Length: 239
Image 1: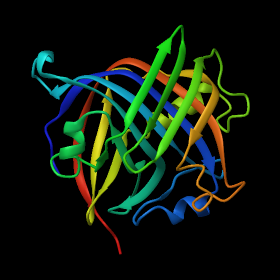
Image 2: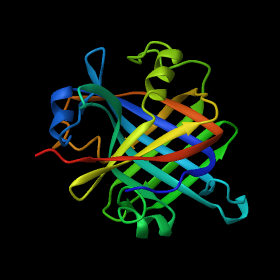
Image 3: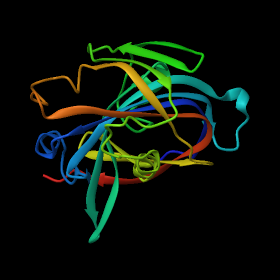
């Protein structure tokens, strides 16, 4: 699936990240993807992103749309023409924009569920939650911090930043193929968040991640980032 280059502003992006046992992550990954490991662990999580003035590149902001969005993400690798590639596999997307829920998987990569988002942000405190149409839920409360979670597998903010900057390529399932998008930011800047509360029906599902196989690790914040989304060649599903 090919779409025009999309331009806009990332008004707010929270990356809430977990470490997980690779064998359980592999079970939910379709071929050709495999977990990208960091110090022996798979990295999974949720991107909670508010987009502003989203429209085809070159068009005026007045026609742009705004939306809250959630994407469940898994850091992955795969082999392509004997070269190892890296990015993220996105098993599900959620959006507050009804248009995206209607055209997702048809004219825009990835099926989009339509949840009700609740966001409250003030004085460097961030609350966001949603309940989706299939009862998938996420809830996070966090505040801006001056340092990364001391127990993070990444150890330093720079390490975490570098890891996620390399995950700019994302693939979503679409029938028998995977549609790709690449995020190109005009600048890359992340800040650490101290997470007070986080709940995820997907990552807390014991049928997917048995007790002890997944652990919350860290959260990062991006704000007011001009960016583009660019279409990538489709990857065929491997049986």
